[in-house]
Length: 191
Image: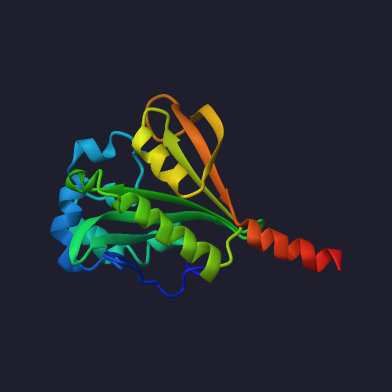
């Protein structure tokens, strides 16, 4: 991921900004990490939960964590709302997975939908990613709706995945493809 995201982006649209997390965001991150409601539908191995010290997490987010994923803070205006994550980069076929988690007080306000839109636009247009994937627990209907609103299609339903719990987690797999990029490649190869 370091080569793909050598510059940490700052993405902005309307009132929503995705940007690098700084020490001044520690209180918001601490609130997020300590919320059982936020993490009930998420894997156990997320980076922000790896260490008990939030300040340590922030200090190492863009060196140690960047090996595997890019995590940005989600902000509405100047207010910390949660995290957006891009991970699992595969150069062929140009694939990245995405995830997001918001403070409970930010649920139901369209922030997740706008966050995912910013991520997908950035990945498709700036990074030329062709395939974006996501996974959700089958019980997480709110996250499934966010994916549908952003043109993701559920391709697998009720599949077991290892999310770090004692037994497999039953999840749905989602995909969004850049059909424009695929069409451009088709046109180049067919002429």
